[in-house]
Length: 137
Image (tube, rainbow, N blue to C red; front, side, top):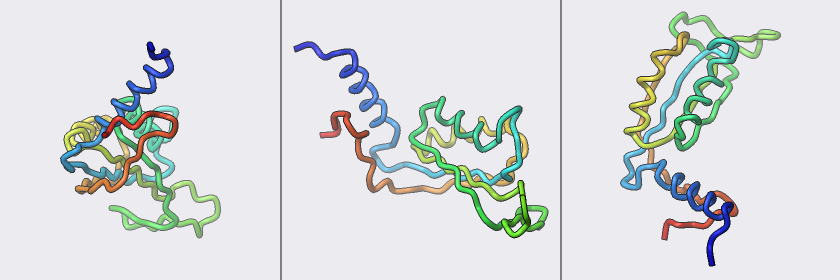
């Protein structure tokens, strides 16, 4: 029986997803520390970074908003200040070490980044997307 276009697309997505992380365990977590108020053109900088990672089909990205922090200036950024628009934000991206290193080179085009770190991670669980076949066996 010939697969439907939807089944073919689902299978392609599952295979592409499996290729996102290094099966040998050489994966990394990139952390980009910025202020919530920083912008890249018309959009928040954290959003521009996540959208770039998505465009490049990186395994995943998350934005975490902090309630207190400081950087180079040592000025505290806190939720204690009413209507504070400069709270700390961390963009985390997980993918193979190789893809993370390539992505870091692209960050040079983004102004206002405070700090970028990278550390090795062990991916313990990365199940298939619900409703898609598990092709890992």
